[in-house]
Length: 325
Image 1 (cartoon, helix red, strand yellow):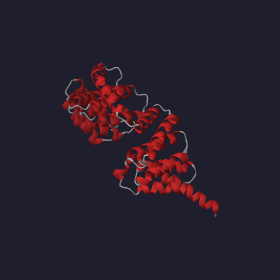
Image 2 (cartoon, rainbow, N blue to C red; image 1 turned 90 degrees about the vertical axis):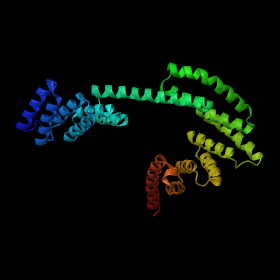
Image 3 (tube, rainbow, N blue to C red; image 1 turned 180 degrees about the horizontal axis):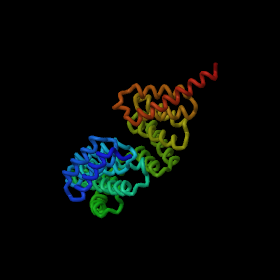
Image 4 (tube, one colour; image 1 turned 90 degrees about the horizontal axis):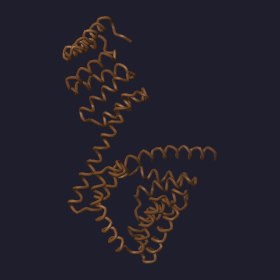
């Protein structure tokens, strides 16, 4: 709704100064209008537009936030804020502003266009950073690291000529190194890596077969609790989870936990498997063990997931107790 007549008159004066290119004078008028009535978003929006014209983007940000505070449904305020943050090189904040605006009006063409441009800009910057990192890794002789970095870049921008040019130099060196490395692997290590390859290709049953051969071979040599064996158990548990073989998940995770009782991944997977076979109290025990660990060891994603599981499992256990009364 328009402000009072004096504030509207100041806005009109500000508009005249804006059209005449006297942005400082226009800012004074819009500021005076907001002093009278700070709840009219147009005063703030026009002020932000003036600051944009004179490249005072920190002031533009303040005015834009004043616009949004005046009316959270005034979409132009989000566009103004995003423009200011983009020019202040706060790309993350800019995207958040655009997403907030799109939550108000999901079809707004200005917000959608800027978000698309910004996403492309971010992608380009990320790819450029990957290429710089790859060049540095290659210069330091870390060919495997350089190749992995290029793979990450390719996922973001397939067909990029700079990536392809660098890949043509790095990949032959990586392939030679990889062939030499694989030739030196033990039969058990070969099965473990073939299992990894099968898992990446979603061939879970084939992966289980390779991990099983790896584990059995290690056990025959008395290395059933080696690091390689623990990795194979952990990876086989991941495969079993994918094919809903919860008993298999529990068995493999237990094998890992016998050697490493605070293995977060094994505890979480086993808890999920216990829940899958309706052994809720055992699941709850594993979840409580995870939540008792230091947060930096567990990680935020696992903490959040375990908190949700704990709430769900507590509710289920209480319902079962009530049903048995």
